[in-house]
Image (cartoon, rainbow, N blue to C red):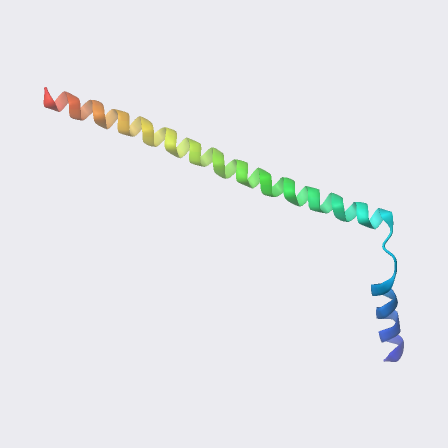
Length: 69
C-alpha cells in the first residue's frame, strides 16, 4: 500500500517535460478551434434564418399593400 502511495506521489510531483506542455497547448488550441467552428456554424444558421425571415416579411408587406389598393 505504501509503495503505491509513493509511486503516485512520484508521478504527481515529477517535472513535466516541454513536450508534454506543448502537447497540452496543442490539445487546447484544437479544442478552441472546434469551439470557434461550432460558433461559426451557429452564426451562419442565425444569418440564414434572418435572411429567410426578412424575405418572408417583405413578401407579406407586398401582399398587404396589394390588398389595400
